[in-house]
Length: 259
Figure 1: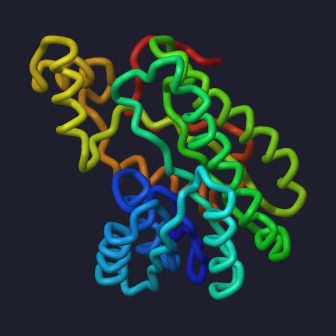
Figure 2: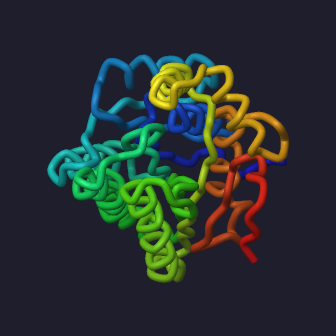
């Protein structure tokens, strides 16, 4: 399927690794020029070079801290000014939540994830409004539907509520806003995170991964690229019918029914 993304400019936060990097690369494969955003410049530059080399598309690296108003404004000034404004925004910059947060982390995590996503949307959506077209995808997580960590659940559920509000607000301007809940995903840092969690649970990484995989209907964990393909669809002209809604990319978590 042709996703109809040729000539679009996509901005991906958290774009130096993991789901963010995989998404930026796939969007470039589909014809987008991409801007990868994260806090540290060198990994971003490496990511941008890899994407440009693999796809032939333009890839730009802009270091920015999405938890900081001024930093986001500076990033947006480059995107909206030098690059002509983004057509797609994928918000994937957040603190990994493999190990449950303490309740005391909640203010910071809301600033990084919820407010960070909102900062980027408010900074970049005016250009989409002017164009009459845009796609925004917010990466949240299945902790929004599960207990176990107040901080993880609240920050992800809050992203869902924000997403629906923005979909209603921006929809008349031709912009869709959706949220994706990845399940446990195998990224570059997965092995280290798994080892730390296994040590806390007094088990082995192999046993823990097998337990996690057994909870998934397809019998294994997804890769970052497999999640990124779903994001790319939501970010495309083919994804217009989905707006203000949640898409779960987990391989099928066994058990609960969400009617």
